[in-house]
Length: 509
Image 1: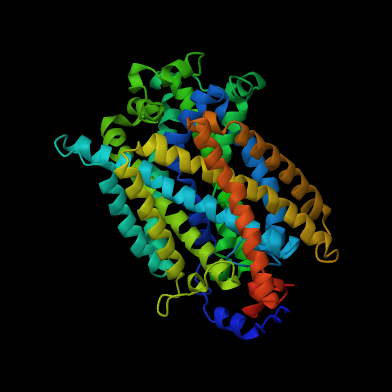
Image 2: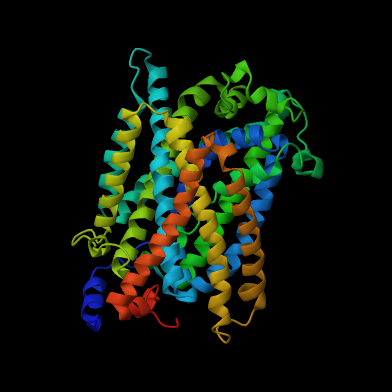
């Protein structure tokens, strides 16, 4: 008995390719907004930076943002160079598949699904806690459970993700602008009033000295800084919807990296100076003054500078909306990843469909909504802590998965140009930058894996389970690619292909 020859697949490929996203909709600022929204600037400064100071290198945290921003800019050099010749909503996955082949692409695709689904779903825990806590400060008798607020946000995001991208962009534009404004007001007042609680103390740059950088655990500080750039690939995720993607995507990428990096660096430096930049910083972060919660640090620092109303009413409110903006940004990214993989045949074809009216990846959006709903309900029913468990466990898993994926993508850029020697003549873009960024990201990923239990507080068994989801996803992805190769060899051969060719854009390979 012999195996039957695989059936021709050109018809099935053509059927899947009929479903396309809305083209020529997003400019440079719009694409950059999605990346910056995922970084959640206010959430990063109120939530990530203080914890990084506590567990990492204290007053040296601003220097970790400087180091990681430099690494991301180096990574961006090769990344945007390839983006000029290759566009796909699959982003990192399509880079790996296009450069390294279908099996590697399949593995990368499923690692991306693990990472982005974990990030998006975990954020519901922080949102539920922050939003319910804010409402309870308005009326202490309300005592709204976190999961009620989480499900409310879930319902709104499900609708926005289902509809066309323009609506999500308008919501994100308003939320991101507001959170930037309130933090910039704080920054300007620190510059005007000086450090040490607005006492006029001169600001200093000691955070950028070697002694400050090596205080405590600088490696953990670097990990938290790297987490601020998760969602970085969203610039290329939206390449099929961008106006003139050959120009829009590189510009949006550099704009997003510089905005995130400089904003986090500058604000964290002012936060350290606002406290006074002394040796008791880490003790203060767990003191009774903050209720034992380091995430209260920014708000405690802000009161002497911008007043009680702007801090406790406006900034706390925008802290919650910042998380909502990140939720929406990650939901859109997950939906487009699922759409790209459904179109390729790596996941059920239904996920690769677009809405007839909105031209949105509505099936990918629905799949993420269903998963998020199940996880929220499961954590609520089992009475898990929304921050220590749902948020911390899943977002750290997401960060780790995407960091590994970025490292592989850096080397994919190297392979891509090595196989096309006449495409780019600048070795800085095609060799040096990808290698330097790839090595740095590999080292960061390995250390993050080793410190995962310290970062999450999970038990040994749970730590192995969570971290194990990443190689498990890679194995499932490679297996799904192998199945695709046996069933539809033509589709396998075209995995990660340049979608700009399909859109009749000249000058691309």
